[in-house]
Image (cartoon, rainbow, N blue to C red; front, side, top):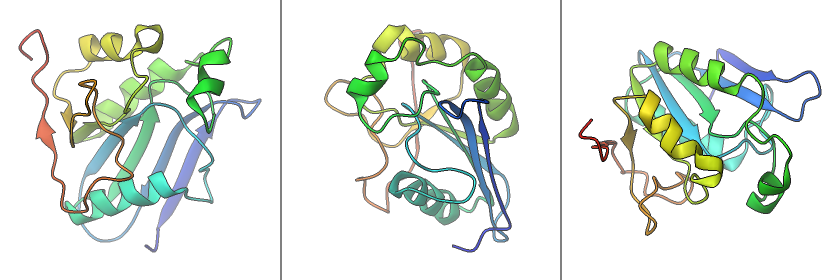
Length: 162
């Protein structure tokens, strides 16, 4: 994929990534993916998860992708995330809200561990109109990396009827 723009917002210490954005020429509109936590991708380099999200967004006709996470702390393994003293990050809620407002489709895709510190439940209370690609066995929205390329978003009916 050839990008026209690649951006990422980090904390000063670089331990937290608040947003990652990719734009390309084809399509229109913005899709937001809300994952568990950022790994290695940055403003120059994609990781496998970002490449997968870009492909989904492109295939669905969008021209821009924003990725945020329940936790902004950069970690490759969930155990590292759970050991962090502040895994959420000081400005994470602000960036999630702003990214949500800029997008037309919002995909929850945090996989397992979203209930750590009550983050998934808190986010679901604040953000209506979320979609998911597949629910995993623990009834959390599946991580996108290993889902079929033909997977389509589904509206998420929350426990409270939203």
